[in-house]
Image (spheres, rainbow, N blue to C red):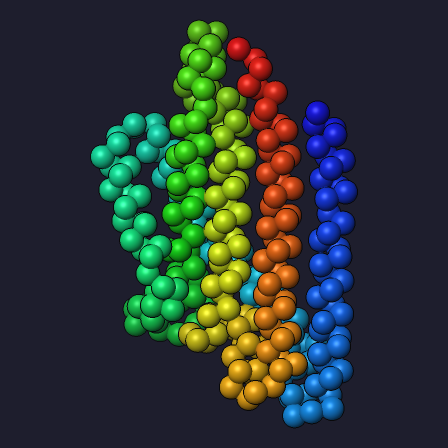
Length: 251
């Protein structure tokens, strides 16, 4: 089962290479088209790669920070089994999730000023809820009979969590991570408004100067990046499911 899943994972990378190829074609075509227009100053290979790198940094840092906070918090809430505390935390984050990204950026800018940190804080706040929600849902969805069987065999609570609950809930938790990452890829385009860079620089420049090659390059690369990261994390989710599912039969 696990070996078959690994083969599917390898073959599943083919669409990623295809999407990457499409991105390269779009960039090369846009840069060459820009060389015959006024967009040449705003659309070069160096500028595109720098914007893409900055965009990836924003997404990676904010998503990793959200995972580092939301996952332990979700585990703690499931350990204590306090429905009231869980409801309060989820409601607070739900309210924060309803606030538009541009409003969060504005509030962060008022407290932290312009720059990379401001954008990361705003993206981090929006990524907390899906990871926290899926962590709680994943752990709570583990069959109690499996846990009781493990405890009956003499396994301590910590080992039950690491060997039983975590592997079985990992695919659900990973689904929350996928949601947070894809959301951050789109929202990170607004980071240019606070001077944090990213592919949003190309989008805003193209809009303000009415230069379609610049606008299309930034928009297409943002969309392709979201699809690629979602597909890659989806393959990781399948591997986690294959690794955790055999445990469900060990009662």
